[in-house]
Amino acid sequence: MIGWYKLDLGDAMLADARLDEVKAQLSAVCNAKEPAVLQALSRYESKGVHCHLILYITADLQDKALLVGATACEPPPINGCEFLFK
Image (cartoon, rainbow, N blue to C red; front, side, top):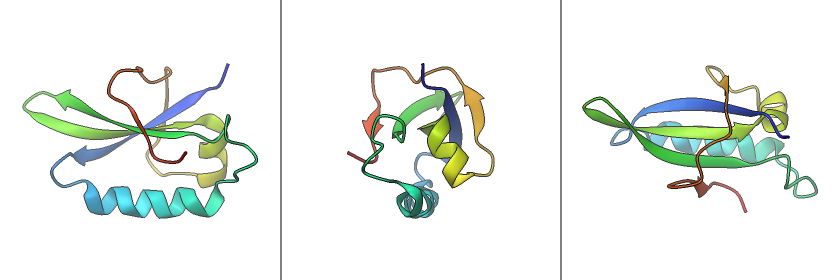
């Protein structure tokens, strides 16, 4: 089973710049030969009054990217997730 990490990118209305930074960081370490273990997904989740953009990445990708603030979590829910890399 693949372990997962999540990173809250903040308010969905303001998260675009941070998402672009994270995408660039992840792109620098992604290897097309390892697609099953290097996955990144995004999902909008309600956090009280606001909606946050949550990034889910596999543990193997976190080991390479070392995203600050990412915490271990359960696998992401299937509904509402979008792949950042295909």
